[in-house]
Image (cartoon, rainbow, N blue to C red; front, top):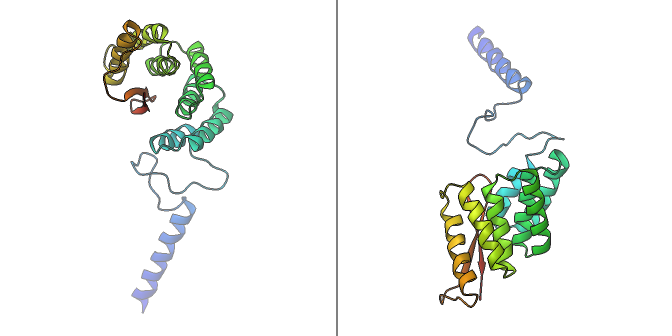
Length: 187
């Protein structure tokens, strides 16, 4: 009987310790998604927006980026993310302004230069897009296949605006952090 009492007391002690320390959830360096977000706490809007962009949920991503702007202000990251969502939604004027504003904050962002070039390609401004892609390519040291492909397409289009290789034209929108979004344009 005494042994059963000690075991019960030990179980209650562990349960109370888990409750007081925030539970038995994953640590901050865990590779798993956060599960224990308490009331009044929110997951980073930039992370949520990036995940929604990957899932092609552009309106929801835009909302998440707007929340991030409220938290962080209009930083280069936030402006670039807002521009990416607006570009994916076809709002070229807003996207161009946000990319240019982002570059005014930090002009050394190859991803933002690339995405600005995508906007210019969508607007059939091939000569300027070519220069923008060259800048992105130089800042990236030629490491990104997406930027290289976009530069090749811009070069072909600036030399021959009627250029059509018989396939759908695919511009590659580059996300901050390395992953790519693909923006397809049908001729």
